[in-house]
Length: 414
Image (tube, rainbow, N blue to C red):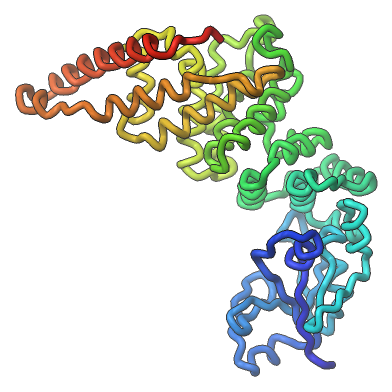
C-alpha cells in the first residue's frame, strides 16, 4: 500500500468555515510503526502511534474499540486501517473531513454538507463510546452558534441517552476541566453550560452549578428570577468585559451558595456568600482546578456583595475588602475582582447596559492605598503595633478617598 499523508479534523473544518487555522492534525495511511521508525521519524504518542515528521505530529490512521468505561476504555488498531475508517471514528461530521496533498477533500460522511447547513451531527454510532464527546459537542455549539450552527436532533437525543445511561460518570477530572477551560476561552461559553443543563449533563459534571436552576430570586433586583439563568447571564456579561478565563470562571462560580439556601427563606439568600465556599472547595478539589482560578472565585464569592454596596460601607469594612484582595498591592487581583463584580451587576434582565461605577471606585481606592508610604511607622514601632498602626492609617485613607470620590462623582443608587 502506498503511504499517503492527509490533513484532517479541525484544520480542514476551520478552513472551510473561513476561520484562521491555528493547529494542524495529520494522519498517515498505508504505514506502520516499524515503517515510520525505519524512516527516521521519532515516536511521540503515548496512547496511540504519533510521530514527528518535518516538525509536525503525524498519527497513524487508526480505529478504536470500546473495551471498558470512560475515555480510556479503548483498544487501538492501526493495522491496515483506511482513511475512511479513521474518519469514521471521529466525533462530528464537520471534523471527519480530510484533505490530501493536492488540496482535494475526502468527505465520506457528509461533513461539508453539514457545514453548509450549519449542523453539528455525530459521524457514526461510535460517538456513544466516548462520553467526552457530549462535552465537546456542547463546546462546538458554543463556539459556532454565532455562525448559525445548531445541534442535530438525533445527536441531542444521543447525548441525552449517554447521559442517562451513566456514561458521563466515567469522565476523568482532567478531561472535564480541559473542556471547561477550552469553552471559557471561547466567545460564548454560557451556551456550553446551557446545553449541558438542558440535556441533564450539567447535573453530572457540575452538580453545584446545576442546583442553581429553579432557585428563585427577588424580582425587584433580579427580573430574570431564576438563579441559574442569572449565573449564565453573568458569564455572558463577563465575556463582554474580558477574555480572561480566570475572571469568567469566578463569574460562573460566584452564587453557588444560593443552591443550598433553606427553601423557607426563598427568594432571599442570606449568607449565600460564605455559604458557597465549601461547595467551591469541593468542586475545585474534584476537578483539580488551578489555584489561580480557585482563589479569585473564592474572593468573588465571599465579597461580591461588598463591592455592590461599596460606597455604603464604613471605611473599615472597605479596607477589610481591599486587604483580602491584597491591600492595594495586587492591583491585578483588584481589577479582576472588580471586573467580575461588574459582570454580576449587569447579568440581570434590564441591567445589561447600566453603569457600574463601583468597579472604578474600588480600583481607585486600591491605587490610592498603594501610594501610601508606611516607612515612618515601621521605624517608630515594633511587633504587632506596626500592623495595627498601619491598619489605622489605611482606614483613614480609605475614608478620605471615599469622601473625595463621592464629592467629585455623585454616587448613583443601585
